[in-house]
Image: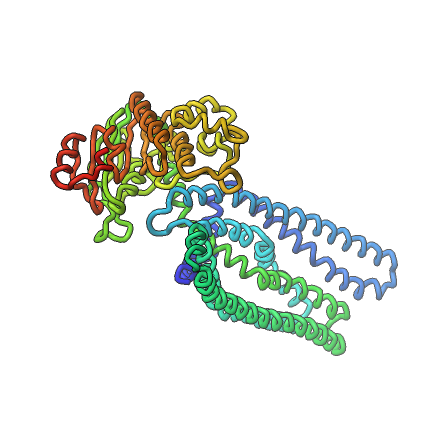
Length: 583
């Protein structure tokens, strides 16, 4: 709820025009489309005055002259005007729909990059951020915008009614004023209730999303009823709040419909009285009512579409926090390749919970091509965070991480990804074929040789050939579920794909059998010989014996760092090693 309130407050602070300008600046071509839509709106609103003038001419000229030719001529003219207006209305609706597609096409990739690349720190992008893109398109490129573009022409309709008779104009102004007051009261009385209900609904949905990965643990320990009660405790108040907001909105909509009907009836009554008093022609009575209906149409559209429009503006305000970093990162990514690879960390610290609670503190390191570092430490010592910092998956809060003398944040993200290989603590496979997983999500048709080479290097080629469809076997949630050791070896093949310059392995032996460990050792030796920097993060010393440098991490601080022999001697004298660790 706090986030929603901040977003709403920011909308009020920036203003509608400022947010519109922000959307136009971020989407080339959108400004021109909106100018066309505005131009069509002007022509349409002028043409929609035709029925009122038709009525005035029928009462003032046709009935007096009793000329059938004049009647048919006027009828033909009004039909043509309304027909042209209908065609232009269809065209502007399609233009606006196209503008919405352009807006989404421009913004959605940036939001996706923010979601994947900027998850750490404040203003974190979440999957819900992608829903803001759809909300923005619906709010800023839909019927509410048409009503907004028609709204300035209400002044023209009001002027026409004043020209018919000042008393009719004053009645119209009074009715519109009351209608706008109802709109403001509806927004004021439903906003806080709706925001609170949406926040609770989001919390209830997050409860289910958070429980999904640990479904088996909930089932095994009989926690489903506890989870259901937790969800229900959040969901029921959310539904009650949504119902209350809907009831209030329905009340104000009923009042606005009643007011419009009373206003039209009052316009007819006042027009008839003016005719009886011989202060207006008979046609004014009907013509003014028709113009009134047209004048109220944009206001009705704003009443119906004000909520989507405001939601779209709030979505734009939330999205802006993620679009700016994404654009900056893309613009600054000037490094596309490197020849002599060196990795350096200068006084790197990472403290997501504040400077007084660092996860890592003051890490210094330099590795050259072909060197291997083993980062040793117990669970929670900061090994995984250090590996993610080396790959640019998170940003250091102080210090710098450099590859070939250039900070990682200055690299093009795609180019950096091609130079890196990573096997995380949990092997994460994509929804796709085995070949697509090894080829890092890309279609593997043009790179099957590299896919097969990476599989051979990871020692998994024979296993892949035994799968139902070989390299074309689907994996992931919609395909074959591999055992942990098999999934880790596929992840290793993915990390080795394309001859990376930096390879980071987080607890790589977890779940591997003897053959898998032997294949891992051979792969590490092979990539080192061709100049790849290898970093192994482990709590065990079995694979660390291949490294020429060791680093011991304890509670985010480097306890010891240096050659394998020196650090191993220090460990032997400080902490008795287990048989498993020494093996």
